[in-house]
Length: 243
Image (cartoon, rainbow, N blue to C red; front, side):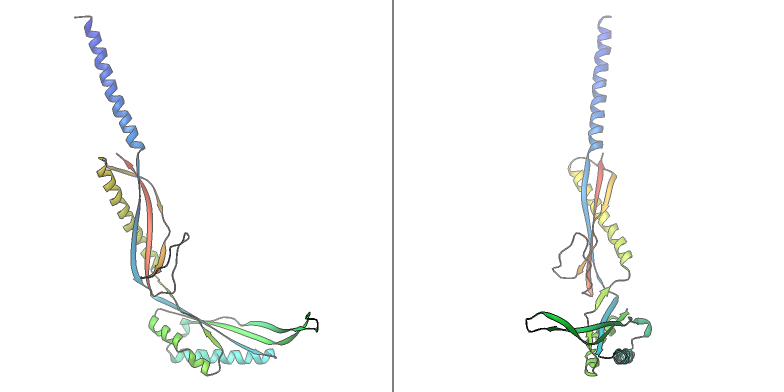
């Protein structure tokens, strides 16, 4: 009886050690497991800022004459914008660009010879930036009135922006994070585990496309400026520990 007692103690110790080892291995295994998920959030919004640009030019043989004409055009454009209730604070004119232009000449053998000076071309840009989108859209459409007055103006399609983009991005990040956590919790529950702490998180590319468009996302991020109604999308990849 006395000789079997030590054996009993040794056997009991082995059993306890085995249980502790098994639990330690199980903990180590679980602590090394991760759940990696991608959360996504998107939101439709309407632009609150419009930027419209146009360029105009004049060309004459004498620089002084070209300058006089383009400054006259600038005054007429300012007057036109004033009639459309566009304020000076919404308007910006660029500096004048001067270019000497020449025509090519060729000899009887088709070789290029000394070009002929054809005049000075002066060009200038005008830009209008406003939060009154309807007003500026109308201005861009009716700019043909200036062409009828003899002004060589090229009007470009307006661009649309959103001034609260930073707030929108923060809101979408919060929603994308919540979406990722929900996905991770579902995976953990279905595998008989529970969600641990966040191991790592990385924000995906912020994408802005036109609503109901077929624009493709790009690796560097899409930033639509041609549509007044847009859709913002953001993703976040999060790794959770398992416990």
